[in-house]
Length: 162
Image (cartoon, rainbow, N blue to C red; front, side, top):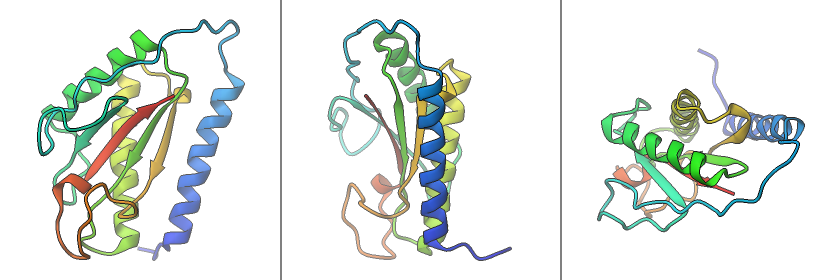
């Protein structure tokens, strides 16, 4: 397998996000109707139910995993409802990882997590051109942790919208 640099992964994430934004701009609704911004219910799981602020849904993953479990499926159902009810312009899907393992591998893992979430959203009727993927790897973790320390709250994907 070819080595992947963090720089090339970040560039790939930027290009992917830019492509989604360009596609969205080309296929904008001809007569957009104003709608109230969606309000998220508390994210399932996490340290305490309801600990996440409104306007964000959080999906947690196992160590090194990018597959969606039953709790994540329920959160995707909630994202689909929010999209249908609030008609956000774009749903931003940000993947993260903890700081266990190599940074380049964690960046790729965060991208696989975000991609799995977007695929689940598309399967629920959210148009692909209304999504944007951001792979953050282990940068800007929601819970500070030392390198090499497993932090379950950092193995996540956050869905926000505007």
